[in-house]
Image 1 (cartoon, rainbow, N blue to C red):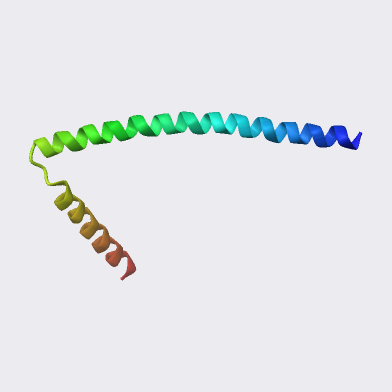
Image 2 (cartoon, helix red, strand yellow):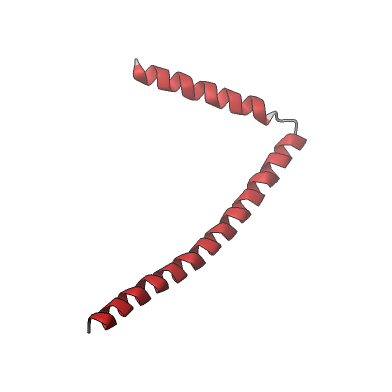
Length: 72
């Protein structure tokens, strides 16, 4: 009886790992699509002359200022 219960628990965990591995593969696919979309928008902005590094620095500075204001 004890062996049967152990085997059931092992089967449960193996099944869970199998399902989670499939979910992980689907998640990777979604992330790849999102990354492709981001890259398309980045390329479009570059073609339009937007300096993304400068924009990023502005956002970082604003975030630092906002944080400093909150800490005062």
